[in-house]
Image (cartoon, rainbow, N blue to C red; front, side, top):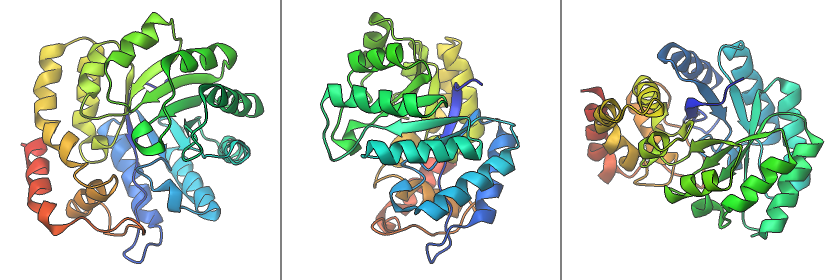
Length: 291
């Protein structure tokens, strides 16, 4: 199964009281399939994974997989800051029928590069499912260096891709110089176009929650090296790429989706509803993407 192109970092819809809205989740899945999204990433940062309990994790994974019916890859976020817990979550995702797992670097602990290597190798050895490394140091306080990623790829054949959310385009050249065998996915909407034009294989995107068809078109053009076409599409998305992060993700993207009538307004503490001062700004960004 290919893990390339436009893959959405899917929100977890919630009722105003914070309970998961499974009907809205199924509607979102169907919408993304109709719009041509290349893959669904559930229970990642955008899916509010830190506040989803274990019973809810099982339900979310089950609903998404049953709704997708093998029409597109389903990737489940299973990374934690404890290797044993990560292994348990990854095994559960495999047993539920997930196509791959997304493993964020262990946060808060601040492991060394050797610790990261051993962590990822332990998970890969324990669970025979395709695995995607996820480096987002702005959130985790931990940076998976290119040489460590390349080393993991050599040692663990079922580690197949890397989501790089550093926003540092020079990392792409570093991965390539090391002969890194992984599929390279952008995790930063603002720089994803250049990342793909430079040889990246796709994106795991927040913007794709709001504009999936445009994001798929952008990925197609950029991955083919069609700069002019990619820039024309990206011009419609630039405001979304930036304004979806005026407050911590997924606060803005859930607000826009509620504004679009796709989901209700629910979000879980410690995250709160989008500040009213940003409402007009986000409406403008949405309108520009739809122009």
